[in-house]
Image 1 (cartoon, rainbow, N blue to C red):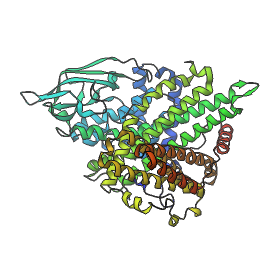
Image 2: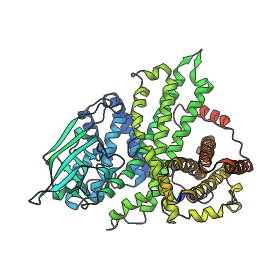
Image 3: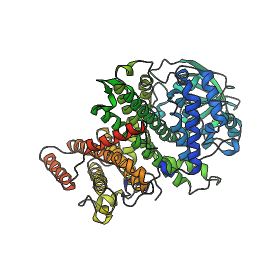
Length: 589
């Protein structure tokens, strides 16, 4: 089974995931190269890059182009490396070894939504014209989608395109806002409705008259990146610059956002680790009451939580990359159907893309908040790096579809896969209706059997509440946001537990690494299990009332008691903090 979402139905005793310890030799070399470049070249100028500096940004991008990092996903025939999806995540994570969120923003926009539409949907002539210079970093690309009244709802766009009398150019009129890389862009992927109806993608370049770039926005964070408004004032776009087909723009717009989500997850995961390193080193150096604050229990708890979040995000992101590579490996990259299949496969893994984005961005948000708290008053001073990180990280829960939109995507896609039987969810619902921990899974034979039982109990709980929601709402469930949000949060928590446990099992051939990971996994299970219980309670309160609510709550409590799970979370956090203080940096890579 290579379909997206399969982690939902593969028990811990039968499923496997990809994780960073499985990197190939080439992937390890790439990881080392990116990390080394960002630490040695970019870290020293990170402060300069945190302010608007187009010259330095272009210089760095060209240097990254010389290393091939700008062209990781581009075809080899146009100067690209055409590497696997895990390698794209390695490149994205490595960017944050420099701590420069602004450079990461510029890089991701150019190499992702600014490039992939041409790679996936461009004609040979379009690819020949644009990709070689984009691969070297000589040209910077942008992606102009958002309008004042069309954000997440792209179909509400008002930008229009009309073919001129000569049939040579489309005349575009409208305004695009919040365009990343806007001031620096040599070309742009944008969208307009042909004759006010057919939503279509276009390639703009500097030869297009009527493309007017507005002033820079005064942003809360990522101030070293470019964000501005595009005014299309009778903008003349050659007919050969239509991307894909007239009227097919919605699919292009939505499909290229999926890779942006899992790559943003990788960048934010890298940022989470960077925050761990800053926090533990400050805690070891800061003396209060005649000893380092790293010796105080409340600080240790924060440090332990930061490690757990980083490991959880790392596990999720590389699981997603591994799943995509496994599915794509079934089609030779030089096959004619590959370009058609690629976006479809990525779309099919939409749940995973949203998981990566949510888990990565929310891990970074919590880690940076804890880092500022550990720094204390110094964390509020701009001379210290965590102050800038605090401002910079906030956009990540808005970029690439807000985390609320991504939760809707998780819930809606889950419902779709259940109703269309793309996954055997109905079968699992029936199989686990009465027995939430099936005996035939042989969980007692696994390492940490108590945790294995919690994961499978939680999987059954998801099946149970999904069935109850479908019975209550039917297909309208996708529109019931009060229900979809907690349902999506249960999926996120289950994914964290399931993927984490499967990674732990896969570490059997790395015994030292497995030993270091054990308390981290135990915390992942305990914390996410509590999240599942909280959201189950929320949904029961939505679905039932009066005596029915009392009855359903008692049944759930009975199942919880039968599980006999008694986590020692503080004990495990103490171990994690001791390990982190020993290594003085994030130690699970």
